[in-house]
Amino acid sequence: MKAGRSGKGVGLANWVVDRTSGFLDARLSRRSFIARATLLGTAVAASGCAVVTQPGSPYSRIADCGPRDLCGDGFTEFCCSINDGVNACPPNTAPAGWWRADFSVYCNGTRYYIDCNEVCCGPLRRDGFCAGCNECRCAHGCDTRKVHCNYFRYGQCGQLIPNVGPIACRMVTCVPPYQLDLGCTPSGAVDNSTANHFTDCSRYVPPPPPPSPSTTVGSATARTAGELLVAVRGVDGGAYLRRFAGGEWSPDWTRLEGATSSRIVLASAHTGRADVFARGSDNGLWQRGTDDGVHWSPWQTLAQFAGSDPAALASSDGVWLFVRGGDGHLYGQLNEGSGWPGWTNLEGGVKGNPIPVAFGQQIFVFVRGADLNVYARRYDGTAWQEWVPLGELTDADPGAAALSNTMLVFRKLGAGLRYRLFAGSSWGSWTDLATANVASRPEAIVFQNRVYVFVRGLDAGTHYNVWNGTAWSGWNSLQGSSDAAPAVAVLGGNLFVFVRGPGEALFTRRFDGSAWTDWLPLGGTIAAVTAGA
Image 1 (spheres, one colour):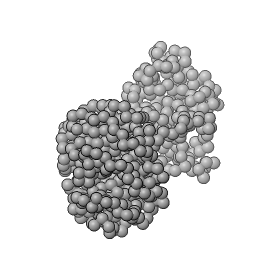
Image 2: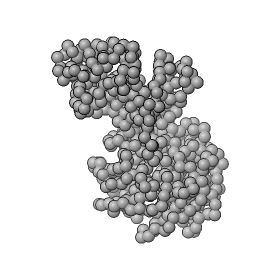
Image 3: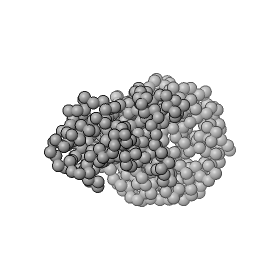
Image 4: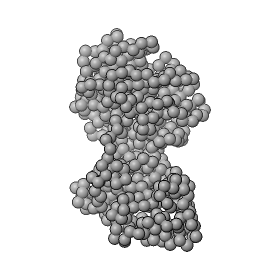
């Protein structure tokens, strides 16, 4: 395959290779890749398929390297080598499995490898893999290992993804993958022959990192008709709250003792009770509540391990709570006023933080899948339906909001924002939301029967767009400067926006439907952090 051929061409050629050599797959293990590559070359040559046997094909090119070169040792190159120095899965790949290597000179003796497989884009091969859409090659010559060549999957990561392509590269970590935001389960494999594999990542200098798309300043909720609570995580790890009542803010922050490691999340039931949720410093999920906005119950643990920020939603039935578990599955439960009944495993392979939305009597929860696409699951009032793939890559958690007859879901990729409409029974197609220059995850909310979507722009300002049911208003700027995605809340006839501004303090603006107030500093030293980046 000549360099420069399109992804579809590469995929088709790899599919042809599979048709001629797939009978070998069942007879060769992962650790037989040297023999497998040699046999593949023989099979292709015997097939008479000129499209994959021309000079310069990936197989003959790799064969040009000697058997003692890294490119011929059967293993895949480290991700930092092909991902601008970054030890992470590159775009259009996803974690698909992992193994452990003991007796390593790194990581105090135990090291973990995560395979980043291509997201399916080529034709489906007979072995269940998708033909690769990138050229199988050495990463950077014979002194580096190969990339986009090995068709193998351990399968403990990305279990929402039924089919993947070849392994693009390998991540390496000193922390078990199931404790990271990778959608991996604890079940692992061991291969100590990889314990001391090494590549010089300093040769591949990464570009300056873009603004984080995942951090969010905190959350706010209207506890009663005239009272708003806002919660943030301080730089000391504590959960801090402030009240807005009678048209005024309380004079200072109230600290809820304990240490947290996630965004602080609030939700209020129709009874006026408010709950606060956070991932603790022990990685467990913790909750406490208040009936008057002042006195709080003690912290109680609701889960031993939370792999994401908690997500809470008040509905007519009570308060829904969602979190990603250590196995990458989504878990949810409903407090109907008599306590927390226990978790329901909603399965899936989830990355990042869940986003729940009430649509009439139905509950939707949106997630970023392990393949970096948007997925939705629906509770119809009686039971949870199956996951629905909404497609399209996203590099941040989605946003969503619902009017009485229309729901919108938003997804960010790079500096662009797109949305998709659900009109009660079917989804429309993804549509660009003009030129947004977006630098954060979208935050959406309904105010005065309109959907408002807020983002942090590349200029560090806060921007919003309004959907009136038929058309968008266009982007508006709230000026000022922030370094995290905004948080939003509605109290009666007012829409509140909160950002972390200069000095890491919390700032707010209020909109009554016709005019915005100036930015009001609420003080504090706020940590913009999420557990599920």
